[in-house]
Amino acid sequence: MTHEEKRAWIMLVVSVVGYAVYAAVVVNRADGGTLTATPYAGVLLWTVGGGIVASIMAEIVMGVVNPRASRVSDVRDREIGRLGDYVGQAFVAIGAVSAMLMALAEWDWFWIANVIYLCFVLSAAVGSLAKVIVYRRGVPQW
Amino acid sequence: MKPTRVTNSIRALRFAHNEMTQAELADRIGVTRQTVIAIEQSRYSPSLEMAFKIAHVFGVRLDDVFQYPEEAAP
Image 1 (cartoon, each protein chain N blue to C red):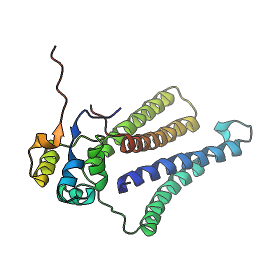
Image 2 (image 1 turned 30 degrees about the horizontal axis):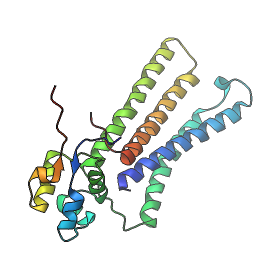
Image 3 (image 1 turned 135 degrees about the horizontal axis):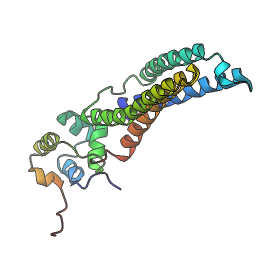
Image 4 (image 1 turned 180 degrees about the vertical axis):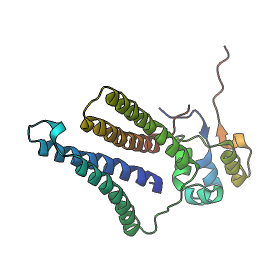
């Protein structure tokens, strides 16, 4: 497994686990009440920050556990990286358009912030999943 | 389904060249060993430049390394 493939796995796991933790905390805080009245901003920022720290820590641990592993990346890694980013970017655009429409319709800030966060998570998770699949099954011709 | 129709003889050529390892070939063409594995298994179609580098390592012509099935005539 190349260094870049390991990084794709880390991003996939961190983004999914981070969002799961966020969703669990917010739903737990709502305790059957309305979600829009639930404090969410702090948890959202902490899970975003925690995800960044967790990714860095995972890469450090990966280096410590297997210090002789190659960190080289090549043209195939770059091609797969671009493909994954291309797939992930679609969700950023969907999030931006959704947030714009929700703001125009004067939806609660809770939903606007959450649709943006969800689409960032989907961008990272689906983009990383695409990279992992392509590493395993081969680069498609297009 | 294989992502490319390009087939290759890299494995046979490696063995014919003193049982060259995938890691050695990877070093000589400047890619990772995983990329050599992916090319050998037809999971990755290399660039023309990389294909020439591989042919040069073995001292053979490009179509001695890579093959592409001919299209049926319309």
